[in-house]
Image 1 (cartoon, rainbow, N blue to C red):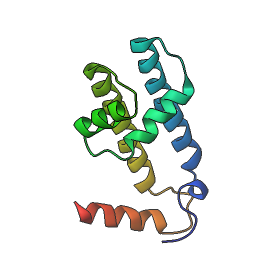
Image 2 (image 1 turned 90 degrees about the vertical axis):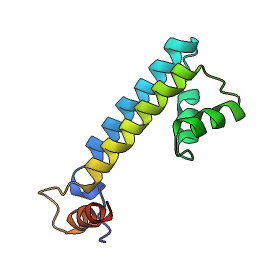
Image 3 (image 1 turned 180 degrees about the horizontal axis):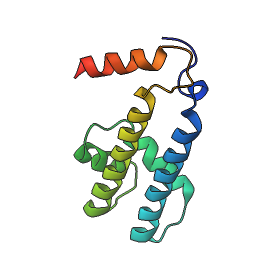
Image 4 (image 1 turned 60 degrees about the vertical axis):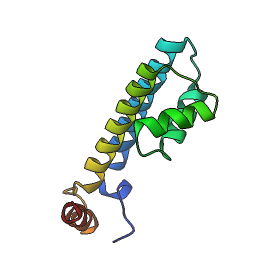
Length: 115
């Protein structure tokens, strides 16, 4: 795989914007449910989600770290975060027409054959 990755292939800015927009959704959901408008809390929740494989594990991890949210909020946050990951994956495997390298096309071939 070449070193250009997503950034130099033109998808980097779009990917960062999408991630930021979905991060704002996480922030808004937390604020709507708890009244806490802290960006740090949203970032903390996003960081904790990376180590979880499912919503039940996500809830346990949040509880263990003092973020004891109601189940409906946890489910909503998990769905938003999963949508972020799907969008990230879709953007990362889509080859850009401006990319002079085959790195993204190769990544798509590997990810499709892995399913």
